[in-house]
Length: 121
Image 1 (cartoon, rainbow, N blue to C red):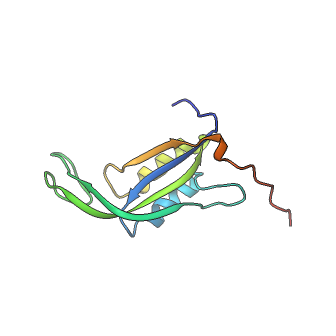
Image 2: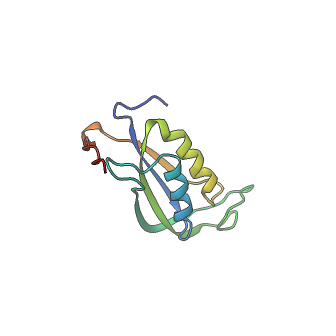
């Protein structure tokens, strides 16, 4: 993937309730979630996911061949270019699903604010 001019992305994934802390911590530790003078930033919302495991799948939830509806939490985080691969690797390792859904969107540079440096204590 070629770098986007802003060098910043938004990563979105979906996890079952009770697993978001582990997945978020893994992504934070890999470099996600820093916005200006803040870190460990994420947006978490609840919704319903649906899928049907196919033959040969080993689903965390559900049964092969049957439509499955599950409560999930949508996690959204900022990821700098240099952390994209480590963050995705950490997400996949920490996520309970066999095939976690994830989206990576380039952030328009106009959305970025240049933060003042934190005051030195």
